[in-house]
Length: 519
Image (cartoon, helix red, strand yellow):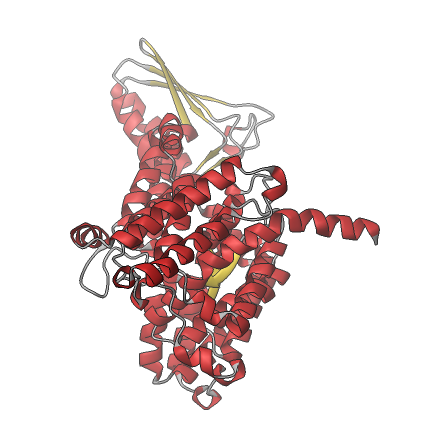
């Protein structure tokens, strides 16, 4: 019992402050993503609560945090329209959650192993860059785009860069002052505060400082005080009605409609891929290098989404912004994610009026700090030093995500990463050594049909009068297409005055290169 108390106390020392920072980041994102999805603000809040408490409890991840995902806003909005009502959409969400549970049971988490590390690092750097770019307008008091919108093109017909231009043309000087003070509070407190004061997170001080300045302006300079659009804005009905009145329930009468299953499969697949990407990225950021059990994560997400479908939420995924904020704040266990869900619940129940006093400029300071830590200049230098096969997919992923959205950008990055992997395998699978007119072609490890084009080109380059040794004795696998290409070359070599020797060995694992083989 004493050991349990000690471990809990040790975790709370780190996870308590981290949960406050994640809560402050998650609150406006929950609201913004829900409204952008065509759902109610409550749907976003309840998704954050379930994502934190339920998914956080079941998940095996130490640092990831789940909640409503910006990558699914368009899917949710079009699905509600297609199915005719939010209640019909909830039916599809229940089915999607059950599909995710099945994916976890049947071990579909292995998909994550096919995400190239260069693309994952590019995704993290892109998210950091987007956080900075998207928060600059909020830092300047230009708050027309909702929090959590990571897409380049916006519903307002603006985009990420035009918003920044408009923000500089129409600055709000009190918002700028709040942003600067909040940024100083966050950075200086975390850097210079005494160890005994670390339990008070810099993010909380930033928010309190922002509220204080704005309220003081209301007393001494009323015209300067920030208006509602520049503050966190919980809808008035949440403040006036009992919490339980906002639950919505699925309409199972639509269960025979084939469109429900199409929507369910779409949500299950996209939510699972976004979760696996976020988990992979979170594990890379985790200072303790812990590995999340991926199939358990899919089951946790599936259970969470099934519950959300039953009570009126929107789809949840593991989310890299919240997870990054959690790691930056020093979280050591999943207790932080659970506590952030509890804080969301308690704040809506008892502190809604206080939450509506928080300036978005203060939250911009927090998110910009998180963004900078994800996209530091040294990250680009490190990736450049790894060579072009790593740097190009990394850079293209960043550009694609910044100028489109997360899912499209990741898809482009993955396609390019796989292309580079295939290209590099051309060279790694076959080694060619030349000395005057003597040529050694060695087949290494696994040689697949992907190497066929490279091998044929090398055969065509061989000059008349050359002597060629083909050594496949160390290859564990040689594709039939490769064997066929070698046979065609050996049959035609005599007409080009080329001598070919096939090196064989009794110990070769490949029958074609085994000595005394009948082939």
